[in-house]
Length: 303
Image: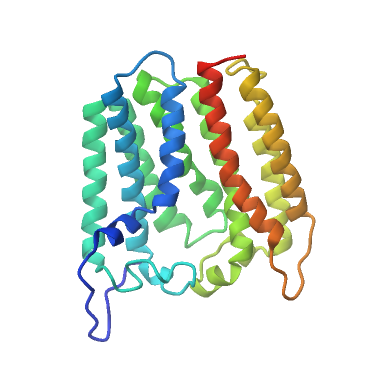
């Protein structure tokens, strides 16, 4: 949970770069892209200004979630090398500023979404923020190694929100895209968790490699990669996408599964540099970007 500065320390004046860092911009980029793809793949037309405003609202909502996550986990972040340099544990921001920034950003994102699109998309955006902050950050993450599995729903909302912002209704394709991100999240994050396991252990966060061990985590990475690949390809035979997306999904998912087999079947020894795990983690990000780009390309330029 968020902790105040101690031993007479005072936070340095807040810099805009520190506030920006609270929004987790690298995570936000994937959120914005998948939301934009959901909007562009939807039927019908949306005025460019309203489309831009809707995507901006989703970006601000994601940023608010990141800020509130860092506010709540400032004490944990201070215990991990990977996150100790963030604005709150490093003392560049005080917790009250971070809390106010996160709440204000969340409120503004919802008002903007309601103005730019419809109440259905606004409710979905509110649900994604609340789920990430209260269900994932405050409840699941400190209590269960299944935190990433269940919490993955928070990161799966953007394409669904983008689609609903454009149409006002839900359809099978954005639901399948939601499912794809939901199933992608465990192998993506557990690959990271394998090579930063000591950080999570130091902070007392029950990530899968810490609680269940490496062998079990590797098997589960492979399991989720296989069902994720099936979910990724499914829109093609079900008739919701064409061959352009279908063959892209087949090739990219095959590579994902091969990398997951390398991770899932290996054992590590002293001094292992975890290169297969790092490759899988890096590829998983590119995988989602390219696959969602293929959704849009297939919609606008079908084969």
